[in-house]
Length: 319
Image 1 (cartoon, rainbow, N blue to C red):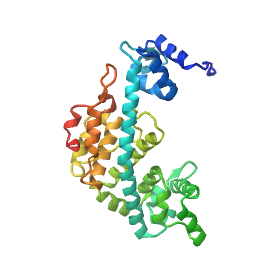
Image 2 (image 1 turned 90 degrees about the horizontal axis):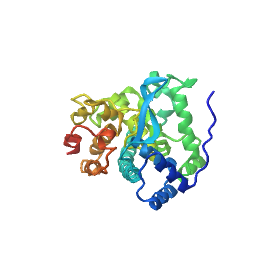
Image 3 (image 1 turned 30 degrees about the vertical axis):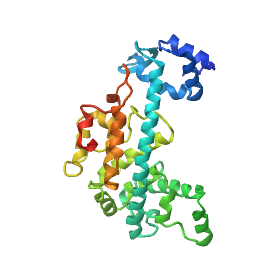
Image 4 (image 1 turned 45 degrees about the vertical axis):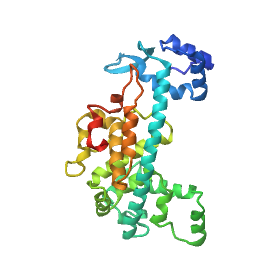
């Protein structure tokens, strides 16, 4: 049986004392207390994780566990520097994700809408194998549809209210897409009719499965950004597929190192590629490159922990 949680509530001063006792160097106590008051212990904690000691798990020696004690050279101010770096990184990603999400809405609405104004409502107009896959005691499409319709019901847009006050029909796809979040859009792309997936992916110069995996990856990143969570070195669950040379030659290099795909680098490269396809004159790639080149200097964290490894800035996608 697991033990109950027994740690007591701590004042901000006590929180600083606890960190110092664990070996974290605090050069300015008052400033540290201010940061804990404004940012919070729990939100800063992921940013000092790289500074903590580790040891083998007694129950599973091949796995490392993080200890409460800090490594030599760990400083509170460096955790704040990482937090501020990460905040700007999320804002950069949100800029790209907005453009990609808006373009995807248009792609889905225009392509599926030609098949039927309500193509999203029936597997008949989709990839029936994927739509009818078993998913949480129902089908993938039904599960998706429940979420999609919930988004429509929750919408506060006046045009949604006006539509249902005027018509007995459901929202056609070119209207419904405007109520869905990035995750909902990504699953519709996955379930779209094979010909429609091909038509959409062709606009970006890649194969359907490649685009689907990229959009799923970016939907994961979008959720992190929306919740203001740690991004710079977080493990990426939905990893982007490595494209074939004839698809996107500037992104083949993400297959050269696992860290590039399991951390944020792969998502950044994918976002940079898609933004360029949407807007040729974009400066987003330059801004992302500049941000990582300005990674804060500290002894226990570096840009390689975010997957930015092996002369990453020399790759063509960043030039």
